[in-house]
Length: 236
Image (cartoon, rainbow, N blue to C red; front, top):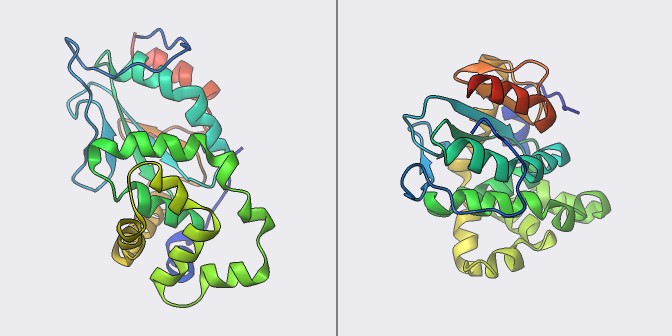
């Protein structure tokens, strides 16, 4: 089920194969002859898995605090990699659609690692969402105040502490000083908020997850069940 938004950039800134068969394990992605698929960054700053010249491009508008986005990632990740990207029938582009300060904080982290690590970290946050998102519902008024008031870096670091992102990233090779530098990137947070607002105002994206294929936003498509047959029809 989607969630609607209005004037989101201002809000966040202020607060801040044709098979597509489910397989049992994720295999290393490859485009042709076993060549590994390397994540890259588009000129607009979004993340792309697969060849920029692939005949089809699936754009995902996703939020890290959206439970339906996490469900989509679990259901679709392996199938998209094996059925679309590794066959070179298409590429997958992720565009952050930031909805709240916690969402912005996670996006700052995933966009801070090298491009070839983004998709691994993106998937890790999505799949672990049920484990880390608890404080969003159980936080105290004092915690929420720390998330939304004061200097930008203080807010994002408070969120990282309360949601245990320091520990999450420490197990993935990023120490606290490095993470703090990522969390202080207010310019990137503003850019992500503006990109979200552009998606709403220019493309008509109203909730997450939403999808676009070759420049066309798919109406009424907000989960893997609805998206899968549309991809299959375009990749026969």
